[in-house]
Length: 198
Image (tube, rainbow, N blue to C red; front, side, top):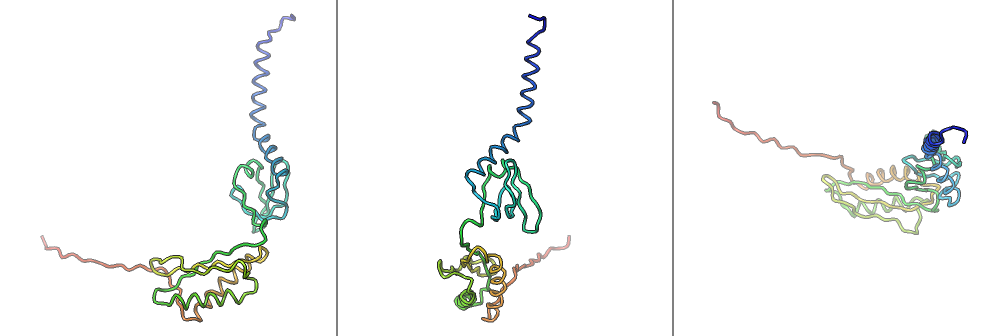
């Protein structure tokens, strides 16, 4: 009616709307994921979690990002879409955790002697829970050693301290019992061929 071509204006508005929509796509995804995190609360502030390839203590959960503090005190800011769209491991949810350790002994050593020594070390630490009972079993007959699995349970609050202390105590306990912790070794045989001189 006023002499302006509306087709070109509509086309410009449509292109601008598409550009704005594409620009906001990531932001809207983070917003939606933030809402899901705040509603379902798979973790809380202070929890130790592993999400989107990062591990740390949750410092803040905002509508767009989640902030972690790594084990070496580095701030990690993760978009909520990356957190919600992948597997989340929360190490603080359950009151107990299992420690998975493995020790190797030489083939010439007695398996029963080694397992008795391991049992004494595990039972001597009051932080190890009696229920569920620790698992001590032969896990594998390796190329150069017998692999014994040691899997005690403990409170989540003492997990790392107990893991480090048990690692040292198991080595010392096996040495006192006369067992050897072998290093990996390979036997190399050289075969010489007799060649006649041409």
